[in-house]
Image 1 (tube, helix red, strand yellow):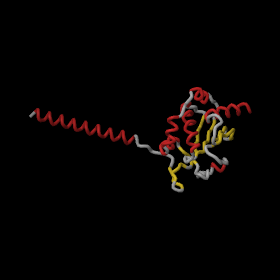
Image 2 (spheres, one colour; image 1 turned 45 degrees about the vertical axis):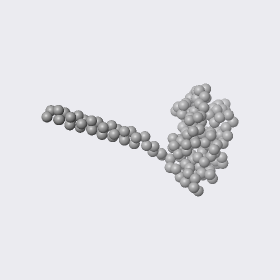
Image 3 (cartoon, helix red, strand yellow; image 1 turned 90 degrees about the vertical axis):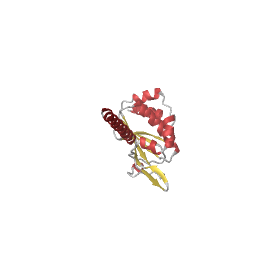
Image 4 (spheres, one colour; image 1 turned 120 degrees about the vertical axis):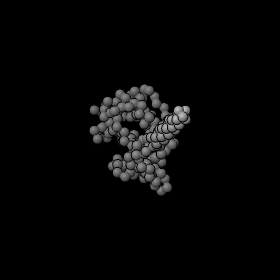
Amino acid sequence: MGTDFERRLKHMKNSSLLILVAMLLLLSCASRTYHPQSPLVEIDGEKMLVGPVVFTDLLHYFPDWNTVFQQADVPDEIVQQIQAIDRSLTIRIFIGTWCGDSRDGVPPFMKILQQAKNVHLKIELIGVDRQKLDPDGLAIDYHIERVPTFIILENGSEIGRMVEFPKKTFAEDLLDLVAQSNDDE
């Protein structure tokens, strides 16, 4: 009788362990489910992000942007120079998720900024439609005609902008712009 009871007890322990493992697997899969914050909209049959954009949502919705991000070169020297910026700046970037120039220019810039982890730099991404409009009217306020357009703000005032094509790279152009605005002071 003791052996039958022991077998049942062992079977119950194994079953309980199996159920516990299955529940943990389900929970771990559920926690990996992506929950975007930027709403994907469809305009004239084309899916895009319009208005404030969370960068990870951009990479999630548009795999070609993610590919550019993953393949982007991150020069240590540029990262160090970005880290050294000690002024509080807001970089407001107007993008078109439909725009190849935005796709080619913004992910490498963002990768460098993510590596630099400079707390003085605040990034705001704003998606626009093909007419260069966003729900909050910021593109109109900033006279956006081409994307990407990077507006560099200090204390709420524009100190410079980078439009569509960088002279070098957008990260290097930012460094030049910051250096130039330092010289102007």
